[in-house]
View 1 (cartoon, rainbow, N blue to C red):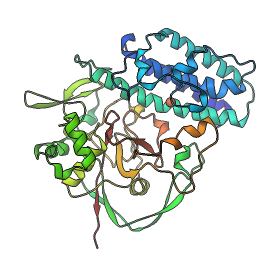
View 2: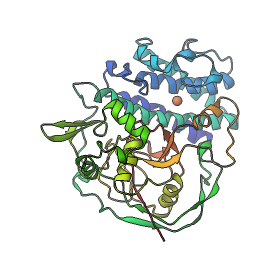
View 3: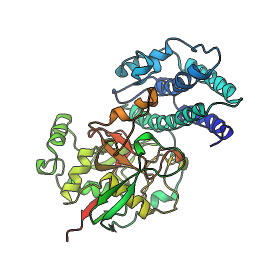
View 4: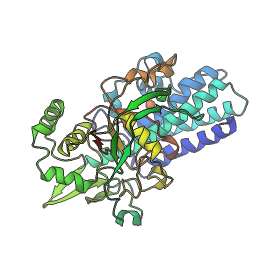
Length: 414
Ligand SMILES: [Fe+2]
C-alpha cells in the first residue's frame, strides 16, 4: 500500500472504532465484568497509545507524550514499553473520562496525519499498517466485549436493533462431508499483502486422507448433544474439560438461557429465540471437542482447515463485520471465512523456521505460543479486511466470549 492509501485507511479505521462505541451509554464503556473483558473506553485509549508509543515517540519531531500516565494505563502487555496497570484493574478507570479518551484519540490522529503529510520511512509505514490491523483486532474485541458486558447485565439490553435480513429465514446447507486427499500441501501466507509474523514462514505439511464438513455445526445439532446428556457424560470430555464443566456448572453454550422450557440466546440485538439453523457460537474448545467425540469424529487440524478453505473456497459474500448483521447466520455456503471462528485441533505453536521480530513488535504474537489452541476463519464481527485463509487466531481452551464454533472431520480409514 502507498503512504496515501495507508493514511486514508488510518483515518477510516480510527473513525470505525468510535462508531462501534456510538450506540453505547457512557456507563457501558467503563465496566470490566471479568478479566478477559476490557472496557470499551480502555480499547479506545489502548489502540491510540499503540500509534503514539510505537510510531510518534520514535518518529515525531519534538515528541512529547499527550499524558505521561497514559503509557501506564493503556499499555496492554508490552514489557519493553515499561510498567503498566494490571489487566484486571482496567475496569477501575472511572478516569480519564470517556470524552477525555476521545480527545486523546483526536490529538494522536492529528499528530499522525501531520507526520504522514510528509514522506516517511518505510519503517513508519510498516508500523502504521501493523497499527491499523491491531486496531481492527480491537474492533472485533470491542464488539465481543460489549456483548459480554450487556449479556451479563440482568436487564440484557441490546446493543443495536436487528436489521431485517431474509438470510435468517433461509435453511442452512445440509451437512455433507468434503473429501481432502492425502498429500503434502503448502501452509502459511504466501501473498504480498499484510500478514502477521505467526503466519510465516510458508512450509509444507502432510495430511492424511480425510473428509471435512461443508459447514459448521448448528444450534439445532448442538441441542441434540445437550438432549443426549452431552454435558453429563464424562466419557465424552477431556479430563481438564470435565473439571472445567463441573467447577463452572456449564450446561449449555455461553448466552443460552432456558425460559419456560424454551431456549433463548442473547445476541447484540438482545434476547432472541434460539435460531436452529445458525451455527452454534460461544463455545469453548472443550465443548467442541466433546461434541466431536459424541459424533465419533474430531475437529480439523489447522492445516486441514487451511487446505480445505483454499480448496473449497467460494466467492459468496462472507458474514463479516461489514454485513452489519452482528450475529451468525444460517450457512448458505461453506463459510470457511466469516460467521464463526472455528476451533481447530492444533496447539498454537510457531511454524518451522519462525523468527520473532526484534523489539516491542516481537511481543505481538510469539510470546503467546503456549497453552492456547488455534481458531481459524473470522466471525460475524471480524472487520472484512482483517481475515484471510492463513490467519491464526488463538485462545485458551476454556474461553467462550468470542464467536467461536466448529466444523467436524471424519477420518477416511483405508
Ligand atoms: Fe492490543
